[in-house]
Amino acid sequence: MKKLFKKRPSPAMIVAMVALFAAVGGTAYAAAITYKQLDKDARNKVLPIGKAKTTSECDPVDSNYVDCGSVTLKQSEAFPRKTMIVVDGTFSTNGASSRGECRVEVDNSGSPVNNAFAKLGDTQGDFVPNYHAGWGLNTITSPLGGSHTYSVRCNEQEGNIKYHDIQLSAIGIRG
Image (tube, rainbow, N blue to C red):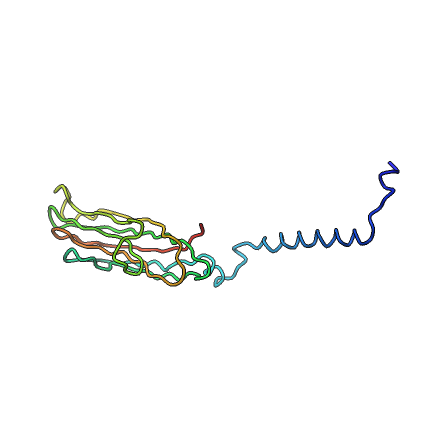
C-alpha cells in the first residue's frame, strides 16, 4: 500500500486537473438553463406563436380562391424553423351538389403547403341543407426564416357552399 502513494502529483498537475474539471463543469452549467427561466420576449424568440385568427364566415362565389383567414409569424432568419399550421372550421351547403376546397398557403403562393387541402361539400347529394359539418387541416412546413403570412384560402366549385368559424394558428417548432 505504501508503494501506491510514493509518487504524489506535482502542484502543477493538481492545478491543471482543477482547471480541467472547472472547464468541463462550466460548460455543463451553461447548458442547464431551462426554458421557463427565460423572460417572455426571449421565449417568443425561441418558439414563436402566431396569434390565432378566427373568421366568422367566408362565402366564395366561384372557383377563385378567397382568403378566409391569415396569420403572420416572424421567426429568426439566422435559425429557420419549421412551422406547424392548424386550421379548423365548419361549412354549410344550401342544397345538393354544393362543394368546394380549402387549402393552406404561405405568402399567398397560389399552391397548398405540403398538399394540405380539403375537398368539402356534398358530392353525393346526401347532406342536409345548412348543416354545419366540421373540417380541419394540419401540416408542418419546411424550415422558413423571417416573417411569413400563413393563410387558409377556400373556393366554391359547384352550388353554394359557405365556410364558418375558421380558426387558424401557426406555431414555430423545433426539428
